[in-house]
Length: 346
Length: 122
Picture 1 (tube, rainbow over the protein chains, first blue to last red):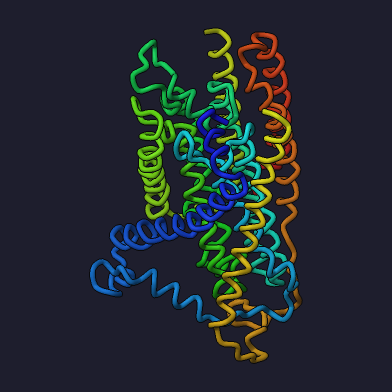
Picture 2: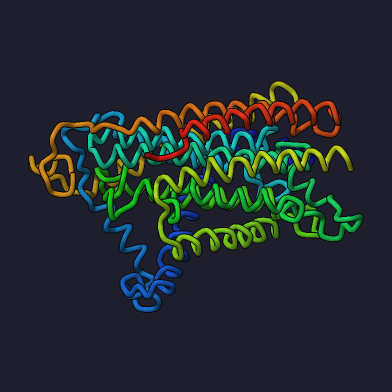
């Protein structure tokens, strides 16, 4: 924790500060999901794929579409299949939501703007975000539906396979930064030098370009976005593990998906693009400018994620697994070794 | 970092988990006030694209189990690599050689699985 943060904590009681932080995260999570859903899912996809529906409601670019969708979902009947394992069925979306929710706590948006800068920040974020596998398996199993079970198993197989390149891609960054705290990683990039020239620091995308590409590819699969959307392939599995969910429960799956996209883009921006750091800006000014800069970087990364989603067709299940095990994982191991050798030799 | 700060930071995480669960309950509760409930038996039949479902749970491909085993191997590897990654500089050549051997042994494991046809989807 920085000195500034602890003086702030002295002025305001810890409990009050915690309450404020929790409230901010509570509003931030649905808000970010809405922003990504609105900007990319509705408007960008509508433009790229000439979809007329989402461009219509309300007039200008269909601005009312998302509000209308919300009103629709809140009126939907809550249907739970008679054969379902009721308790597990009800809890599954909550597990997925919480696994996203907690990741937001460690992403820093400014020198003081972080809910909790854990020592093991990035490790914690990756560990917690992978908990969603359990929620997906719970949803698919409890539905007592063959499509749902197939979808859940595909999702589990995919999430664990791409979890590895995601985690191993981060190791290179940790080696360069020498810390797992996300604030520490931002600091290491801010103070870094490229061949002795340190005016803009050293965003790790320059020295860890392979890691960045691996991270983005694995993140795409973790989000089950289109080239990797076998688990929810709507043309063959209806909607995979989400088949039996209706109304608000289903909305939680969607919300978690977009919130996780935002969180993973946030982690990628922090690890590889320098996070909130703006060269030459410090103190309170960085607290004001930082969130805006971070948001711009997150939107840029999300743009790439959704761009790929709207452009490429789906991988077949065997191609999908082969991509992870035969290419991404060996490549990420090689990346670690090469980074290690360069780090030790130079 | 002192012990109380350490436990405080994880207390924050615990509170956040509670708040997430609270938000989930609150939103579903709000929806319950608004949404209609008109029970009909047909609604509660498992949806399998219109045909009547036969039996409950289907069978699953055993391949997923093997991938899960492979995953455990590599995930444990990742846990061991992280502490070294934090101390690359201080461990120097010794650490690098050790981790190199470690990674090569695991890569051999993957190669073995590959040659055995585990990664081929039949």
